[in-house]
Length: 93
Image (cartoon, rainbow, N blue to C red; front, side):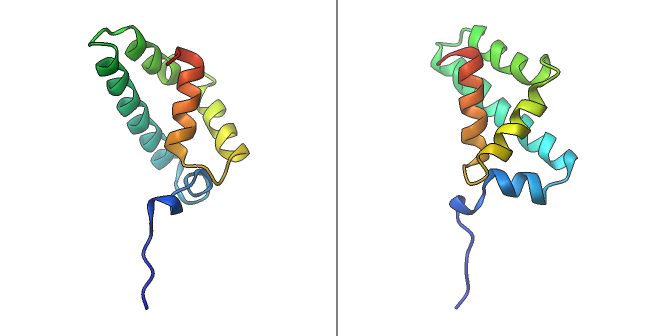
């Protein structure tokens, strides 16, 4: 019998323990990109929410530390969901 990985196997702990710093940064940038574009579309192609989400990662010097701390606090959660919550706290729904 073979085992297969599922989406539930990809947790914040895996990101922190199994990815290099460069891989984590790329992964987080990809999640932020997806969240920003989704927000842009949700907002009827207005840029305010999208800009806030980009600013959350690229303009706040503590953003990565905040994300890493949240990953450490909630190691069994999906990492994208954690970033989504943090972005919503910063930028609203």
